[in-house]
Image 1: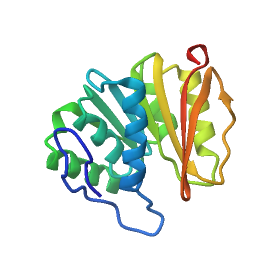
Image 2: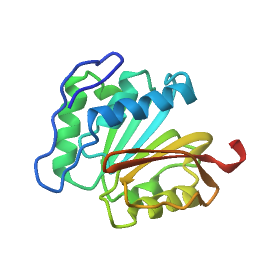
Image 3: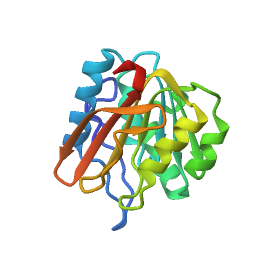
Length: 187
């Protein structure tokens, strides 16, 4: 796994070990960021939240492309160790905060509209993506003009609308599905 673009381009990222671990493949991250680049134009000044962050690859990619800050949330101490190592490798430690916490508890800690871009990549098949998007809406942590990207298994169907967020694009990459949400008033 490597950083695809930006200041840390080409740097290899450490990953977690285990059979339950499934990092977002490079080709899927590349496609995801290509779609985001065309929508956002620029990553500078973005405040990023990476939920179920695993190795931190999604937030690190955004930081490498110019995001202002990132908060990476995962409840596993092993993930926090790998994230910290990856941030150091990419010289992005000062721009990031790691929270070793349950995602649903962490969402209580953030003020309204704290983030411009949210990634979530929960374990597949547990309906965690839908529940997390719903909680994000309840807590109001996504900026009104922000974008949310949820990764699920290709067979996991998310509703077109969750709270005030609506899917504006979906892409399938083999066994992975990426759902892009924004405020329903922006579609």
